[in-house]
Length: 195
Image (cartoon, rainbow, N blue to C red; front, side, top):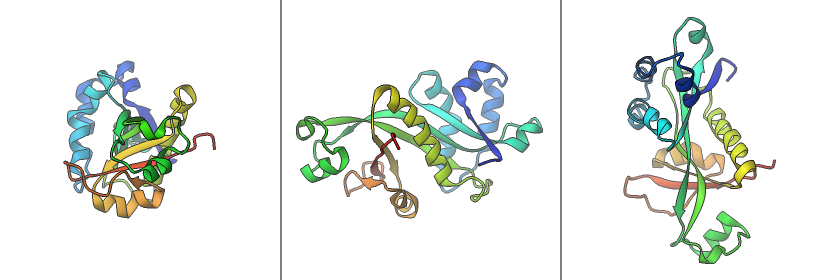
């Protein structure tokens, strides 16, 4: 990750250094053919989510390109909060997710930190910027939020192959065994941000 700097899209927009046209031009060069949703979100939704305060996007910018005057996004994450429906979870599932949370068995929903988007461009070297680097950036931001408002559950949605290939290895568990209406698994991870 040493060849990247992480910039908040909100801060970039506020600074006025790059106008929306230049930002969108950079976003349109982001390529991840296996996950077109990542490409589409960046171009079509990232700025509007930022301006409407729906989610915050953090860009991993290639330092060498930036030094040459180019704005190249090698990876990005979009973070938010989300209410999670736990009404159909078993008591055992609730205990695993929430521990000794007060009133746990009567809850219908819980609030969680959401990793809405997390992806790396295909042209970025996986050894230079790993999926674990991206997750750690998310945890770093959630840790700051947790220290101010509380919270210990991180959620996301992913395709089956990504669960088996990546998220399961990083401690995420399925909220339910079936896919949702978008053919995605809903995952959670309880994180101790005090460590």
